[in-house]
Amino acid sequence: MRENPLKDKSFSFALKIVLLTQNLQNSKKEFVLSRQLLKSGTSIGAMIREAEFGQSKADFISKYSIALKEANETEYWLELLNAAEYIDESTFNDLKNKNSELIAMLVSSIKTSKEKIK
Image (tube, rainbow, N blue to C red):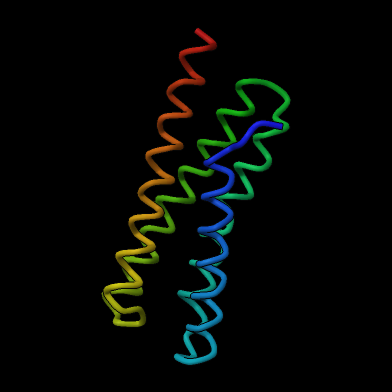
C-alpha cells in the first residue's frame, strides 16, 4: 500500500489533540470545550480513514468534505481555548499550523478528486 501523508498527519494531529484534551481535563479541569475539541480534532483522521474505502469517488469526496468541516470546527475550538487562556500561545500556534496544513491538503485533494470525475 502506498504512503498517505494526509492519513499520517491526521493521525499525528489527532494524537496531539488527545494529549492536549487529557491535559486540559486533568490540570485545568476544563471539560466542555476540550470535549468538543476532542470530537472534532479526532474526527478529521477518522473521516480520512473512512474515505480510503469509499464506495465511489463521490463518497470519497463526501468523506473528505466532512473531514474538512471537522478541521474548520477544530480551528474554532483551538481559537476559543487560546482566547480563554486555557492553552498557551505556543501550543495554539503549533496546533493551528498543523490544522491549517490538514485543511490545505484536504482542499487540494477534494479539488483534484472533483476534477477527475468531470
